[in-house]
Structure formats: structure tokens, C-alpha cells
Image 1 (cartoon, protein in one colour):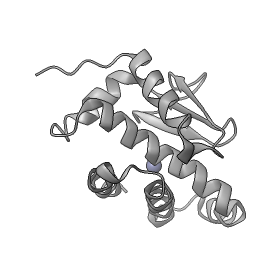
Image 2 (spheres, protein in one colour):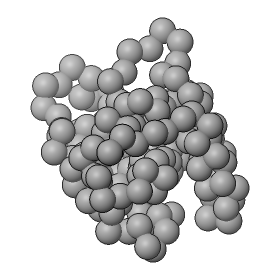
Image 3 (cartoon, rainbow, N blue to C red):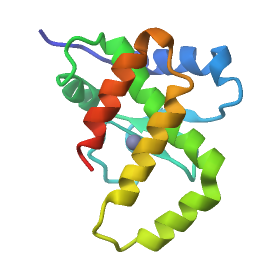
Image 4 (tube, rainbow, N blue to C red):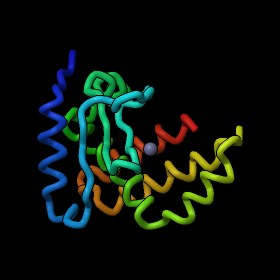
Length: 147
Ligand SMILES: [Zn+2]
């Protein structure tokens, strides 16, 4: 079965969630496309400089094929919450993360990247709706295997 996802669908999901009480103190934008002069293979990416989450609907649909049992709307929300998790991680531990990034800039060891991903998971977990908690964990376990 082909899953359809348009950028306005993602916008609506993001807008509804960011306007919900759980996001009251979260100030970020969600933007279609990977951003100017950027290269990325990710379906969704958080950029700290601009406090922006960039996304590509067609890549979300591809990634979703790994989780066919999750509704596409919920899947978008889970991915979004992971990226918001990166934002919250940066907000809470900026000094620490700057230090880690600086120290590991030319490091082949990917352990520090895992540290970022685990941070996004933990901070995202705080705001994920209860009914999606298990799916959120599954998505993050899957994600960590890439690092
Ligand atoms: Zn991530």
C-alpha cells in the first residue's frame, strides 16, 4: 500500500503539536526542505543555529516503510518529537554538548554521536504522548543502530 504524505500534512501535525500545552516553552520552527546549501540524507533534521527542524516528506515516507504498523500521522509526530528532543537536549546541556562536539570533531569513533541521539530520545520521551511511548522507544532503538 502506498502511503501519501504532503508537506501541508506535516505542517499541520507540527503546528497542532507545537501549540499543545506540552510544548508551551518550546520555541522552534518546522520548515519544508533541507535548507539552502545543505546536504542531508535524513528525513528530518534539527538545526541548532536557526532552531529549525527541516524535513522532506518523501524521505519520511521511505523511512516509514520500516514501521508499517504505525500510522503515518503518528510516525511524523514521533520523528518530530525526536528532533524536538535534540532541541531540548541542546537547551538543557549546551556547554557540555559544545565541549563534546569540539573534542570529537575529527574523531572516527561515533560514540559521541550516539550521545546526541540518546539525548534526543531521553528529552523527547518527556513530551511524547503516552499512547505512543512504546513506538517512540522502538523508533529510537532503530535509529541508534545507525550510529
Ligand atoms: Zn537524532
